[in-house]
Image (cartoon, rainbow, N blue to C red):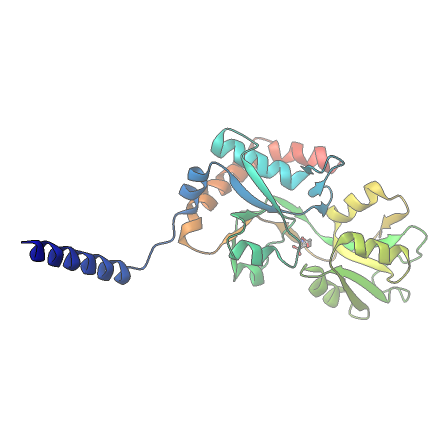
Length: 261
Ligand code: GLU
């Protein structure tokens, strides 16, 4: 009798192992996962005022931060049900795709190249690229002969845009906006190229710098990035609806007035 019981236990165990091995585990739906966890993990910038930056109390603030809070409020009824993870232009896709964030809200332009590796929400903000100069600079056009060296942030869309718009210039990459601004002020470069909205944030704090008085040379619609796939689709659809509602009821506009006066 004992022999039979042991044998049946072994058979059942083998059966369970075989059936378990045969099945490919379906990744858990991101929306369910976020609800279970009770908070969303959002990758944000910490040096891109007025979108994502750390204030004097080391708290995250800005347009992207307010958007994340509105999303948390809609999902959990609590705008603080968020964990912020700092990202920059060169590591945000890697951090997202390795599961370290549920989504990225970090001045990220929707491009077809990026859309091959991540899924984007509907756009929530529109800007375009231009140049930051020292206030005393005489440069006034993209074809100016004095515009020889332009700084960009690694991993941003600026490198490609500058190559197209200012083909005569030499491009230098920087990891952070702080590093690029230091280089500009020390005349290592003649200009910094990035989104006008970010340059606007830099000039808010530093009156020795100015934005060139020339038309923007690119279009940069900002979107929230998600990992590609079925498991993120439900959360993305819910967030698309939140953004559309915020656009329709004026919340996005009042955020623009608050941060980009
Ligand atoms: N919006 C541009 C981009 O996505 C530049 C700003 C940034 O690096 O986030 O590349």
